[in-house]
Image 1 (cartoon, helix red, strand yellow):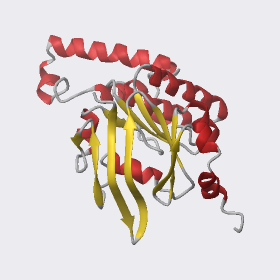
Image 2 (cartoon, rainbow, N blue to C red; image 1 turned 90 degrees about the horizontal axis):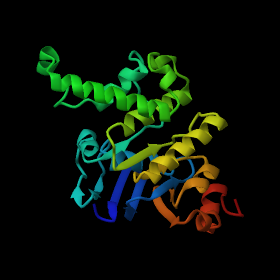
Image 3 (cartoon, rainbow, N blue to C red; image 1 turned 180 degrees about the horizontal axis):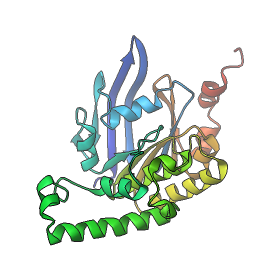
Length: 256
């Protein structure tokens, strides 16, 4: 893997004449915990949608490890090692927590219709390994005690943890986290921040969109600031915190 895992050039997206994203050039590095911040309507989630294949851009290119993924489908991008979570959690409410985890780890190779009928020894071994791995991850996320509970019974914060668990069970190289702390109580937010740090220390490259500025400044190595779809700052947390353009974007100019 090259030093730069994600490269964006001239990426643009408009809605009804309003520019949501207008990023001229942006490189994201491996083994780096990077956060994207910005005021409401800055284009953060749209940017995530574009680079993860959930929306098509009007212009521009997106490269993942030098491979052009501009028009790729989300599942193809996920198979290349870049997994994305969502601001509004997307778990299977009518499945148990364990079933959610195991389903996310299943593939076409180990969970085909024919294999499910024949039940080969190799499939039984694969299922056993997936189950063990699921419990390991659930234990790390402190949701193992709810393994047999339906996902709909989880709190909003626990659903965030489950979605995170489903995202990491396939050992991604890159994790895109869309507001992992949204709607989470302060105690659980601290736990989630520590989990994110642990994942980063294990070598997963993380790109996070988050509104909690203090949390961002606490754990990020690099902070990118979007305003009106454009990058207005890209530096260390310390430098970004005192950047006049950033302060103005959040608070408005003195005249205003």
